[in-house]
Length: 394
Ligand code: PLP
Image (tube, rainbow, N blue to C red; front, top):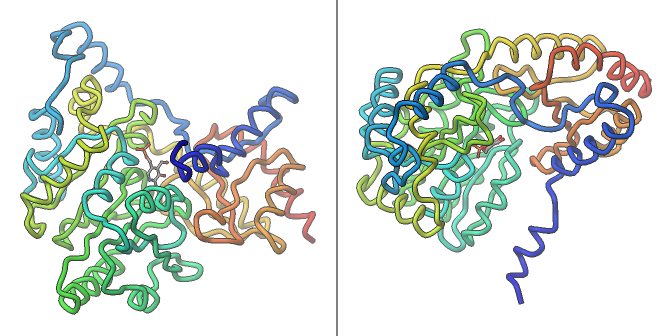
């Protein structure tokens, strides 16, 4: 009676949610302070003060009907202009308001772009480890996700494997840097090689291959790490940005798409984004939050707390003998599971009240994700449990 594939999808909870729910149950049983929950990527740092000030000022001083009313489908023109100007100043681009579509977060941005470009039997490449929802979003378009295994240890793109994976059917490539779950940031050199290869393949196959860059973690980088702005390296780029992590506003659902001004048939590309959003019902992102982010355009949540957590956890775990990828960004530590199997490892971790996520659904069996967007005290308190878990493998 109902769409079978969607009934199935609705019944299967993601592994991360599964562990998160287990954590809530366990916290009720033994007290939240006794459960070390590293499962979910919910920012632990509050939104900056500028967000609260913007909300208060808008509520008190902005016309209420306009504040809560519809904006145009693609978002308020003034807000889009503010984003365009800020982006141009920061990255030297030539984006205008008419290259930007406001969305309710990166997930919406991705589904809009994927539906705008993918057709049945097309292929979309993602590099491991990748956000598991990519599979769900891509398959709904009738296209296929092609996973390309990244370089061992560095988790940069393996160019040989990438080249072999590109076929005539390849329509797009999704990149996510800083990466969930590895924390890895692609180096400029990696991006240049990726773009050169794609240009060569575009010529060979005679059609564009689009890069979709999924950027909820762009602002979460440490120690002056550079995150290349892909529009400056590759014409056929869609940027999917979100304020969920940058401003700690995941529940407010606000982000945007940028269609590169140098995109092939750029006007049609933007029209396809508008049409896709319309068909999916994603018109007019939150009117109030569009205005909020425009007023906080150059602010972020206090990233230094995540850096402190990263340093504490990375240094302690590597000292205990865990193998971890060094994370330059995001708020995840990607750890090689001890023993044979990441699920078994996570079950053993539960015995220490440690909640970790097996990374099999990210396309990387044998690894686990540790989200360090938690209070620093939780990391300090959890270190003996991590030690006991490591000892149990000796
Ligand atoms: N992409 C990645 C890699 C993510 O980690 C997330 C959320 O955690 C999303 C997209 C979705 O972000 P949003 O909350 O902005 O929809």
